[in-house]
Length: 121
Image (cartoon, rainbow, N blue to C red; front, side, top):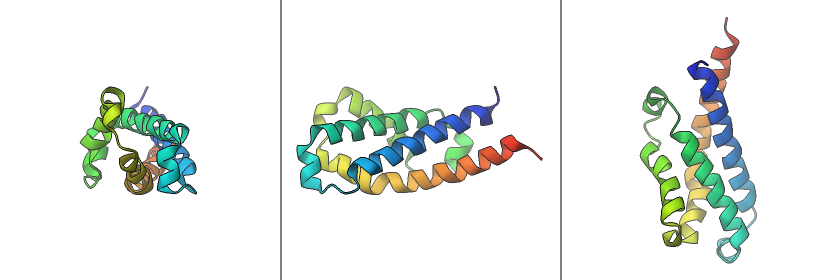
């Protein structure tokens, strides 16, 4: 299996997870989010997927997009799995509302490039 073939599903997983996180938080104010454990769990799961998928992206992709804090993207999954009781809802809220957008943009750009390379000449 080529690198590009394994790259496309990872990027698609990240984009889908980010879209779902956005859907869960789009029309919900922070206070409602803080009080709704199901929405928080859904956001946590989406972020875990983004985190895990990011670990499989190649270094050259990460270097092309050095503005993305890749170590933090990968690390948040560990925090959610191992120190979940210390994750404040407002931190998740900011992550969902602000921090995921630039990552989604990068994933979409790289997905277009990867699919173009897959198609060949």
